[in-house]
Image (cartoon, rainbow, N blue to C red; front, side):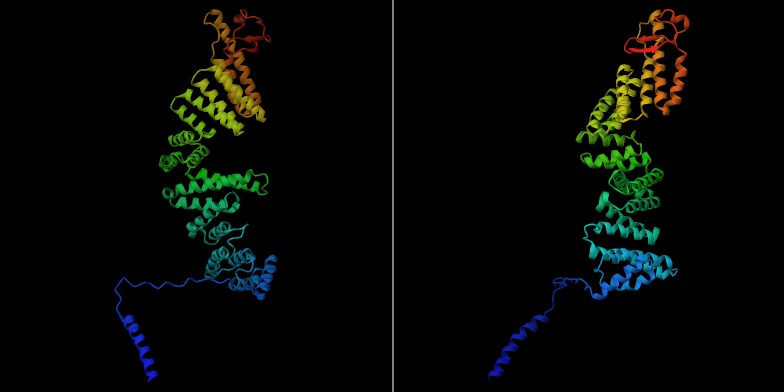
Length: 470
């Protein structure tokens, strides 16, 4: 009787549960069953793995890649966390076997393996401090390029770009170069859709190659410099560097980033690099950047903008700012350029000859301080032209003769220009020939002190130069 009672009680407990289980559930109200998270265990590194690592590594050292494959594959398949050499040696093994086979199916298998290998390396060694995930993504991008050519350009570019973003100036040189190559190939396929991406990738890679090339502690600096020349040349011939094309891309970008100093400076730098400094988009970027944080580059851009609008006084004021800022940055070659530009506008557009000479002499002094002759010649020509254009004496009969003496002083400067700077020799010689015709005649020289040829003569007025009668 006691057993029967117990069974009945158990049955009574089960029946309601069964009844509940059989009740129909309303559509859309069922609670989905959550799968338990899969926790992948680290593969066990066995003694066999250690032996095989040694075997394939020794074979790779001896370039016996076929012999290396079997022990390498055993380790790669069973204990891929055993050693980083699985991936560094593995890349060599796979590439060698790929080049050696003519079987399309085997080539395809090895190509996919070359890429898959980098994903596995990221899983097990992505936290390596020297060769982290970003570095390995670069290797994956290179594998796409090497094994798939133009059939996987999008995937290659994505990996290479992520690698460069992560590694920065420490990026592998070939990763930087291939980023530009791949991005250029995509641009050629779709010039309108990929132009901005190509320009951005070029800027990124070229800047980092430049940093590596200028780093005196970098043993690969010379290689980086040559590769920078290579990517710069690609960009120059690409057509993406066309000023109108840049304007199409960046006009809206500048308007959307008027308070984004970093973006404005990057755009202005790009325009300067490709010599599109007459563009209104360039001017807008420089002006907005200058308001946020004046730099020598933004000041120079604003100077160009003012000159284009015909406001040469304002242009010179901006160049004065650029000169001061460049001096702070110790960018003295830029200082010399800004001083020359100010001299040119003073001479050519404002006819302020003493001011022009002041800026030209300052530019010469800056270049002399740097030990650079090239660039000084154009400054001496500016001074000579100022003298030749000047009439420092009264406009009477005697003054007319005295005013011709300025050509002696002008020719002195042209001769100095060609003497110190061969790059202006042809122009200086032309000016010498032209202005020598206006020297005072023999009869006119009788009205001058020290009228004999070869005697010194002082040209007065604002010029104040001692020259030689001829």
